[in-house]
Length: 164
Image 1 (cartoon, rainbow, N blue to C red):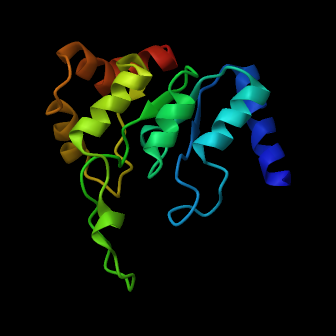
Image 2: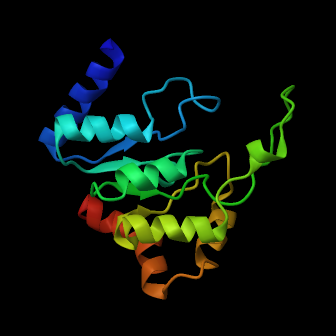
């Protein structure tokens, strides 16, 4: 509980500074160290702290994209594209990966999230070193989205968010 209160206080402080905050957005189970990133928890924090410039990584919720779409798409937050589309390449470790653990969003599901949040709320990200920036750029450019939407995602939205 103390950790959750601390995160909410940090969000409130960032809000008072009008600075954007990036939240690691995972499913909170097998892929996360804590559950503080659940889309449901982010929705809760936004209810308490109020509207702010929040960026939820990994299209709003790595591994729980349906929940992110359902709970966060109408909140006005930003999402980033980092490590969200295609297939993961497992690292050389002792873990016995199942194919379903390696599958990220396909193009169709990715585009559905872009539409749900609005292209003006999507920021380009790579999650480097987990993904190669050039490959991630190619993935975005190859999406069946309007050229204006791709332009916004690949940099214009970040400029507007950061006032540069």
